[in-house]
Length: 505
Ligand code: ZN
Image (cartoon, rainbow, N blue to C red; front, side, top):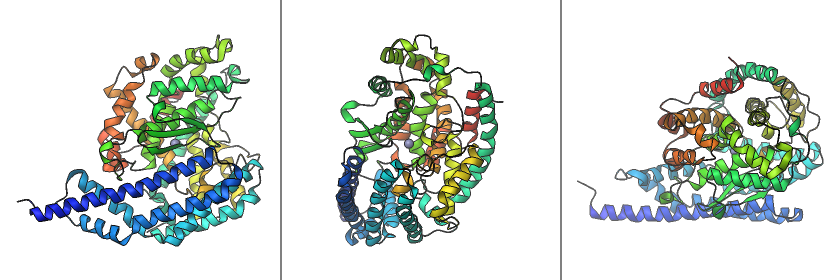
């Protein structure tokens, strides 16, 4: 016997109210994304102060709406309603999860956080350009202090860093990550040494010189179109660091930055960000405006971006398709370059300073170093004033390199200036998920390499859409990995993938 007609009508009304409340909260989040995108792409420097106020006001309004007593009652009543099923039940489950987290932060804290992180970003941008850590330090001290207070508000069992991680990779902990990063770093070491030794004889002289930005753009456009990125539903702009942002299902934008001395830097950034964009554009329209049209974690988001950037973009088959496109755009200088030359240059492994330009192997050492520094900062073992020295020591021990300046050292990433403590580990989780998901994809599409050689990349998007993109937050990241691959998330796939690619036993 179903619930009475009266109960059913009440439930349906409540669900409709919930959907409309969620859509409002969602719309404010997307309006904030427009303001933040504009801040990074177009805003003149003197606009920073006014923009900080705008973002803080809108963030506060969003928080107020998301914790409003009437909304709280609505979610709580629906969470107790056993008659809900399917997406209705899942929307309520996820709304209740978000609400629990949101309510832990006082409104005054939300405003303070927003002001500090917006100011922090603008201070960082200037300080980095002048290689002046001392100028950035007060802003960063404030953000670290606020991050620790955020952790106290959220609550935690073992480490305050766990409370921050929850915002990026739900369910993971410092303990779990330490158990993963430690062995992974040890497994990467022989791959790094083996790859560096094997590559000593490679000739990459052809990559030197200047690469026109216009020609780089032309190649990127072809690659993006082959991936399935729609220019009628997105655009590519230049910003100090590459990112992807979503204003609507049919307006997902990416940014890049050009380096005229590097033919690969922007290309792989663009493939990476387009991987994120294809995921966002693939959320289920039927649940748009609800928490289900979102990623369950950043690790699974990074799984998508890294699949395209590294697993596909740095594959041997892709080099065969890419080379004629590069020749067409950049001219005769590539006449004597072979697909092998191109593949090798795109896969050169070497310890380097800058994370976003690191190869697939050492990238994870950059992440491990940041993870440890973040734990030390948030758990109170490291003060911001000692951070540059600690950074340089980590780079020496993990990558064996000396850091020449804070601009290319401790200030190279945007994350800390924006308060994103807990974000970095998701990059390596993404690498791990991507290798495992790719193995499952190849079982279903065994002729993938032949398709890539022809520039037919559509099969990957078509395969990801129903299995990951449409799922959104109906499942957690580990559940998605299990459903898609048939096994638990396991770094062995990633390590095996790197060993095979770099010919290390
Ligand atoms: Zn990414």
